[in-house]
Image (spheres, rainbow, N blue to C red):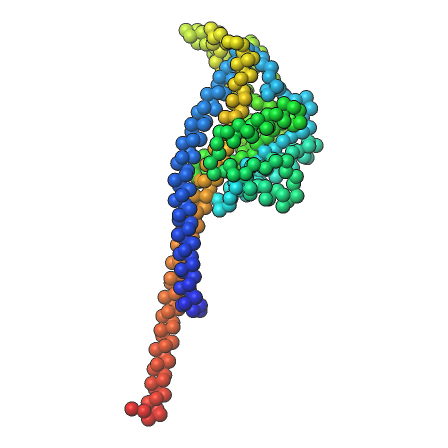
Length: 343
C-alpha cells in the first residue's frame, strides 16, 4: 500500500486542482448569463430583419440582388469554421472541428475547390498540424465578440463573394441551446436564402448533412407575384395576404409604398442583415464555449471530490496499518527485552 505521506501529498495536489476548476466553473456561470441575454436580443433582431426582407420579396414577386443570386458556376466554396481560442471546454472544439473536416471533405468529394478560413486558435493549430491550407485566421474573438468584429468579417466574405472569388460561403459553428446542450451546425451565408432555413444540424452521418450537401447547388426559385408556390390566406378586413414560402410565412400589404424603391430598400438592408447574422453566430459560439466550459469544470470539480474521498479512505487505512505495525514493533521489542532479563 502507498505510504500515508504520499497519499496526503496527492490529496493536497487534487484539492488545489479542485479549487481552480471550481473557480473556473463560477466564472463561466457568471459569463453564461450575459451571453444568453445577448443571444436572445440578437435572435429577435435577426428574426425581425428576416421578416421585413421576406415581406419585400413577397410583395415584389421577384427580387434581383447579387447577394441573393445563385451562382451559375459554384466550383469555389469557402468554409468558415468557428472554434475557441482556449481549451478546457469539454468536447466543444472536438465536435466543431470534426464537423468542419467532414464539411470540407464532402465538398471536395463533389469536385469543388474548397477554401478554409478559421476563427479561433484551437482550430488554427489543429488544421495546420493536420496539413490543411488555411486562407485566413481570426483570433481573440471567442471571449467577447463585438459587432465591429462581425462587420469586418462579413465585409471580407461579402467582397470575396461579390467579386466571384468564391461562389458559396458556408459557416460551421456551434448553436447554443442551453449550458448543457449545444449542437454543431452548418449555415449557408452566401448566397442568402430568404425562402427557408439554411441551418443544418450535425447529425452528420446522413440526414441533415447529406441534405445540405445535396441542396446547396440548387437554385432558389423566384416567387411569382401570384404566389403559386405557397398556400395563401386573405384577411380581407386588413387587406393582407399571407403566403407560406419554404418554412416561412410572409405577409403582403398592398397599401405599403416603398421609397425610394423595393430594390434600394432591400439593397441597403441585406448587408445589415449579413452583419447581424455573423454577429449572432459569433454570440452563439461564445455562449456554447462558455456553457461547455462551465459543464466541463463542474464535472472536473465533482470528479476531484470523488477522488479526494477515495484518497482519504486510503490514507486512513494506510495510517491505521502504519500504527498497527508500530505497535507490533514496540510489543516485539518489549518481549525481546524481557526475554533478555531486562527489568
